[in-house]
Image (cartoon, rainbow, N blue to C red; front, side):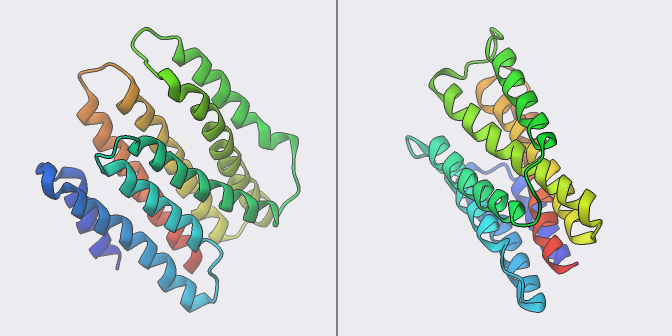
Amino acid sequence: MLTVYLVFMALAIFHRNKKTYIYFKTLTSLMFVITGIYYGIQNHYFILIPTLVGFFIGDIMLATKLRRSFIYGMGGFLLADVWLLTCLYELKNISRYDFILPIIAIIFITIIGKHPKMHLGHYKKPMYGYGIILSLAVANSIGCYLIYRMPTYLFLSIGMVFYFISDFLLMFQYFYKTEHRDKLKLAKMFFYFIGAYLIAYSIGV
């Protein structure tokens, strides 16, 4: 299953035909959902499946050419993050350390938003909300590993860190004026697909 996933991932990342690109991206995204379901059936553990489905929906929305595709994509990922965060708070109590990363994210968005090459426009406020929820989800995935020290939470936390990095790169890909946008896209997709697979794989360990 991993081999098939890596093949689809490589095709999605390096495919140059814009007309068929979305099909390879869809197949790759579908594969991490299938991976999660496969391990979920094995271990009778399906709680992370809605998060993977949210990723899938958000990913496909970003790949479309709809007028508000970015907002639709962000909405899919936001729902996925909210579900994951809710699940994680069932496993651990709220800690003041949970808010360190969200505060850093807010400060970063505020500072980078003022850079002359960064044009967040009317997406700035949604970025704040999304950044807070995503940062909380990442912080709590790490917190769960530190508490339980189980392989499941190790792979989940690593996957979430990769996912976090991919969203950081995505912000620059979409809103930062640079000639390296294609390189940012490749790096973003690499971190995203690896992160999503690790989250799906965490169900099986």
